[in-house]
Length: 67
Image: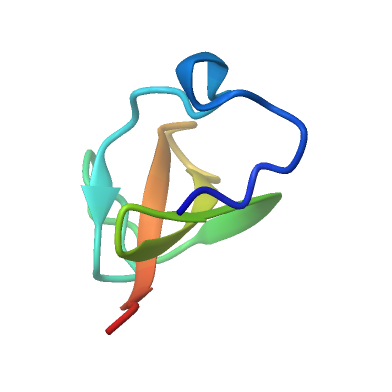
């Protein structure tokens, strides 16, 4: 199930970014991360886009699995 309403699954806007489960940058390990406002639910996961303030790395924070 994809909740990107009105957007065909083949044209998903989801960029290919690293997916992590810890609130820490995958590049520099900083905990200074900010939510960028984009959330996607699908493929059994809820992912929210984040960016590291010190190094600028963008990544998905996997918030929880959908049973």
